[in-house]
Length: 76
Image 1: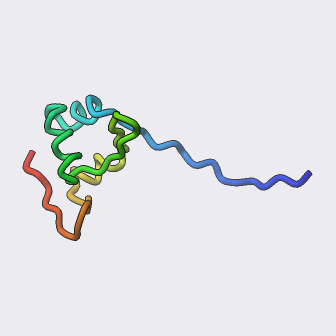
Image 2: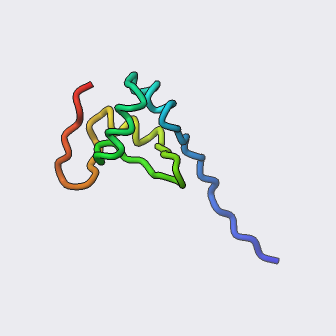
């Protein structure tokens, strides 16, 4: 039997809204607002939002483009 070797991708860290709020040092309500407004990228799985740690870093750098070409970063 022939097996294909594939590189093992390192798993990305996935955050909940409370974890993201703590990391960003803002309230959970603020994170929900940014998610709803498309300022912070995330994915809703069922009723629960999930965000990647990489997306948080990109957001802090101002590298995030969501819902259009020039979404401005909110003031922290």
